[in-house]
Structure formats: C-alpha cells, structure tokens
Length: 124
Image (cartoon, rainbow, N blue to C red; front, side, top):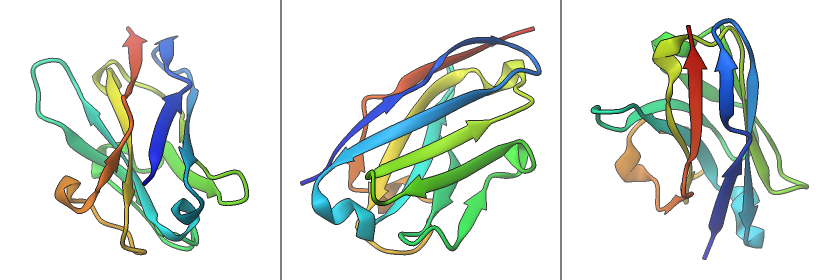
C-alpha cells in the first residue's frame, strides 16, 4: 500500500513560481512511475506530467511544457513538480498519483494511488 501526501500549494501572482512536493509512504514507491494531475473549477481532471520510476523519462501536457518540471528523489520517496511562469489558467487542485507500472503514462486510469490534492491559485 502507498500513501501520498502533497504539499507546496498556495496563492501566487501570474509569472511566479511554486514547487509542489509529494511524499510517499511505502518502500516500493521508488519502483513506481508517478504523475501529477490537476482539476480546475468546473472542469474534469487532466494530466499534467509523469515520470518513470528511475526519473529517466518524463512527459508533459503541451500547456505546461517549458514551464513545469517533474522530478523525483527516490531516496526520500518524494516526487516534485516545479512550476514556473505560472498563469491564471494553471489554477487548480493538483494531485499526485502513483502508477504500479514503471513507465510514464498520461492516463489517470493507469494510476492506483492518489493524494488528497493541494490547491494552487494564480492571480492575474
């Protein structure tokens, strides 16, 4: 069993930065791929970024490419999402997810473990 806890959300002005963290319990998490998803008000949950178990491969949705970076520290059982040049349209609840497979995946149905979410609000 894996338990995920996100942190680092908050209120930031457009153009600013935030770094989200996802701390995982469970020794096997270091062998799982991980991802970040988000849900904006009135919208469905959408894929943001995914990272393979080793960190060697990453994939991003087009709207965040060049602005967001996903990374992980397996020694700390933690996955990060560095968000730069934030825009008001990035406002959402951000969720960390764990995939028992080892490779990246953009589909939420591939993920078995989910955190409770952290709110990110970007003001214009």
